[in-house]
Amino acid sequence: ELYVKTYLPKFDLVAREFRKLVPGIQIGGCGLPSAFGQGVMKYLIREWEKDSHELPDFVSMSVYPYSLRWVTEAEKGIDDEKIADRYISSTFMCRTISAMKTILEQSRLKDCKFYVTEWNLSIVSNNYVNDTCLKGAYIVQNLIDNIGNCDVMAYWGGTDLFVQHAGMTKCLNGAGAL
Image (cartoon, rainbow, N blue to C red; front, side):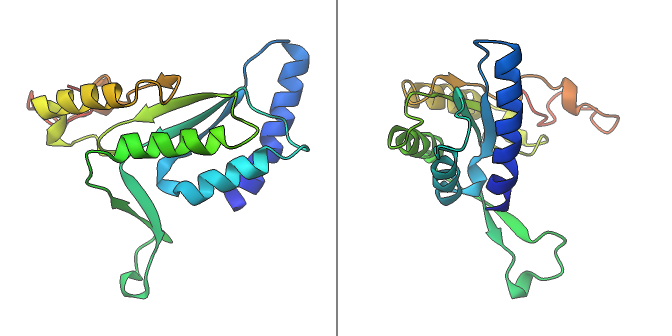
């Protein structure tokens, strides 16, 4: 709720000013992480479609197979208030993207473009699966499964350059790219 209440007034200000300066500009957002869950997505869209807010030209989200949950008493001592739990499901991407598309279609934002601006199997750069044929098949399968579900689908991690450092000496090190 705090995320939405903080984000929307800032979006309104930026969108209003840029639309005055550059007629026809496309402004959207918010890169909502799928880990926030469908409840937060629905809440954001319900709040965004209220008359007092500037409407986006597109809605964007990042999709990684994780969900956030509050830390339990048994897990106290962990620095964060929330923990990311990993989903292991071959249909996670498709279900998540389809759910957001449905949320948009049932709102005043149904005519907005829908962009998945980041997606991947893992948020971890040094994942050995990144250097396997499985990763290539995962990318192709998710692109096929989501044809028609979103307007843009931008895979995250097309280069090892952003994760190279001195400790990586092996050719196959699991860093971000194929």
